[in-house]
Length: 605
Image (cartoon, rainbow, N blue to C red; front, side, top):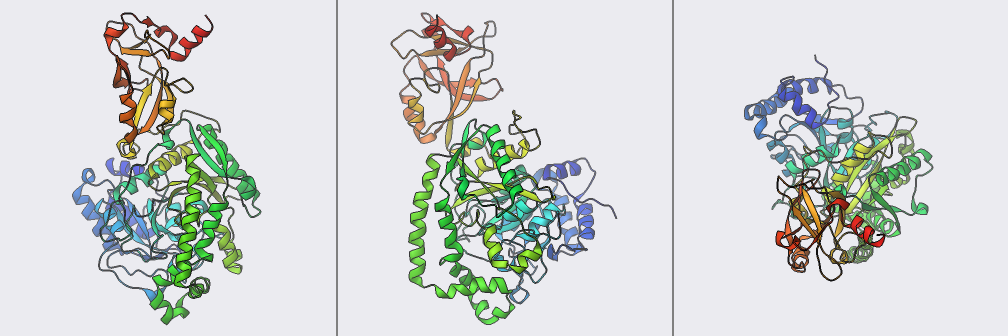
C-alpha cells in the first residue's frame, strides 16, 4: 500500500490531482488504510472504503473545474451530522443517525470535499482538553503524553497528523482555538452565524460556532468561501456584513495586548517568551502595539461557567441528562449539574450584566484594530489533566471564554515550539464580521515565521483565495498633496474615519504641479502621454467608509477631480487627478518626487 500521509495544504493536493500524480479514489484508499490503526483516539467512526470510493467517484465524474474543493478530504467533529452516520457527541447512549447532513457539511460535499469520518471530542463539547471522552483521551500530535486540547480534539489531531487537509470543529468557549495551538494549526472561529449550526448538537446554542482547522490561513479562507452562507433553517444564522478597514493588509495597523500584570502563563516561561516574540513579529509587519485593560474580557469570560450560561448547556440535553446522567463522564456531568442552581431571573440578570460589559469592552475598537492574546497560557500532560480536570481546564479558557459572549471573531495562529517540542500559539481577535482582515493578518504572520525576525516585504499572494475588497464596505483613495498625513487637509480624511493603508508611489508616467491659489496650495497630478517624460510621485493610500466617500468628494474644488491612478505595483486606485488646462500657469514640481519634498524645499530654499 502506498504511503501518502501526511497530507499538505489544499493547493498542494489540488496540484497533485492536476498533474495526474493522484486521484481522489486512490487518495481515499490510502487514507482509509492508514487510519485503521488509531492509537491517538482521533476517530469515533470512519466511513467504509466503499462509501469513500463512492464519494471519490462522484467528484471525479464532475471534474476539477466545477469543484473548488475537488477531492479534498476532511474530518467532522462528532457533534456535527453526516447523513447516515451516527452522531454521538462522544456519548454512545445519546447516539442517533441523521437522515441528512448538517448544512455546513453538505455545502462542503457539494464543493467537492470528501468526508473521511467523525472525530473524537470532549463529551457534549464541554471541555478544552480532549480527555473527557469514553472513546479515549485524544493524544497530542507532537507528544502523546500531552493533551490535544478540546473539545474539538480529534478534528485538530487529524489535520496535524496529515490524515485530512482540513476539519470541522465547534467553538463555544475556545474549542476551535485551543486544539489549534496545541497541534500547530490555524484554528479559525468565524463570526457567530456565518456558518450554519443546523445539524450541530448544541453546547450553548446562542453562542456556538462551527470552527475550521487548517494548516494555513489561506486554506481557512478557502473553506469559509465554500461553507458560509445564510441558512433559513438556523435561527442564529446571519448575513455577512462589510468588514470595514482591512487592517490585515495595512501598513500601519494597531493591535492591542493585555497589560503585563493581566497576562497569565501559569508558570510556563517558554510560552511567555513565544508570546513576546509574536508581538515583535507583528511589530515588524507594521503593527503598533497598545496595551489594553483586559479585566472586562475576563469578567465576561467568568459568566460562561460561573454564571447562568451553564444552564444553556443543560437545556441542550435536558431530557437526556435527567434520564441518563450516569452515562455522562464525571467532569462533564459535574459542570452541567451546576445549571440547576440558576433561575430565570438569574438568566436575565446575566444578560443585563453581559450587555453592560460588552458596551464597555467594545470601546477598545476605538483605539486598536485587533488584539492579540496567547491562545492558552500553557499546556498540560494527560495525567495532570485527569488528576485536576476542572481547575486546569479553567486555566485553558483564560484567553478564550469571553469570545462568543462578546460576539467577536478570532483566528488562532501557530507561533513556534517550546524546547520540549510542544507547539504554542497566539490568537488574533476582532469584532464580528471582520474575519477577512483577521485571516489576512494571520496569513502575513504565518509568512513572517518563515523568515528571520524583522524581515519585510510580506504581502498577500495574488492566488490566495481571500474575498475581494468590494466586500469591505470601504473605498480606497490615493492622495498626493495637502491630504497627506500631517498636512493641513488630512483632517478631511481622519474626521471621516479614514485610515492610512500604505505609503507608495504612482507608476512612472505622472507629473505633479503646484497649482496657483491661496493656501493651502493644491497639487495637480496628471498622467503624461507616451511621448512625454513622467516620474513616480509619492502618494498615500487611505481607506474611507463608503458612506463617507460622497461628502469627501463633494469638497474637492475644480480643476481637481477623482479618477483612476496606476500605482508602482501595477494596481489601480481612485485618487486625485487634475484637468490639463489648469497646469498652464502651474509650477512643475515632478522632480521633487512628491508634495512633501516640495514643501521641504519651500521651507529651506
